[in-house]
Amino acid sequence: MKLTVFTADGSSSTEKDFPHFPEFDGEKGVAALRQVVIAQQANKRQGNASTKTRAEVSGTGKKLFRQKGSGTARQGSRRVPHQRHGGVAHGPKPRDYSQKINRKMRLLAMQRALFERASSGGLSVIEDFAVEAPKTKIFSSVLNKVFPKRGKVLVVDDAFEKNAALAARNIEGISLSESSDLSVLEIVKFRNLIVSTKAIETLIARANGAQSEGSES
Image (cartoon, rainbow, N blue to C red):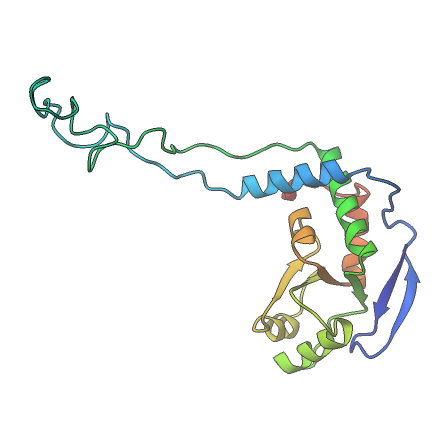
């Protein structure tokens, strides 16, 4: 697949072919991509929401008033859910939301996610994130040349230099991620990705199973 490769300052670009970049025909991998995204979102949930049942709240267990003769509905306890300060009916309890996805499915999802982003024109490659000084203006000008009408952008590199990381951290809508930690969820979340040449090679290698995908579960 051919991708647009920009110079370090973003002033010019060329088309370069990446022969091992994943490509698809039809809907192959779409279901796997969906399932992996759902699993990664579920794995982020803490699952620590908790409510007290009628057996756990404080309060007397004495019958509020006699069964008959009061002219109102019968009541057995002050701790029932419909009473003030009563327990919660069918409320959440701490639970584990994590989902396990096998390696083949994670690889297929990564391949499809990269393909979708590249096919939509949201994946661009830059030679290097070389910033002379840790100034936001310098980094922002490069991004404006690569994505003139940018929204949220994910910047991916193998390892960020200090100047680049400092220059990018205060730009609104910009997030940084290292190629070894990039997840399928991040690729789907951001419509625009700008990736260094080193990082794109790492991502292609990951998508082809050259290294463990354990960090994505």
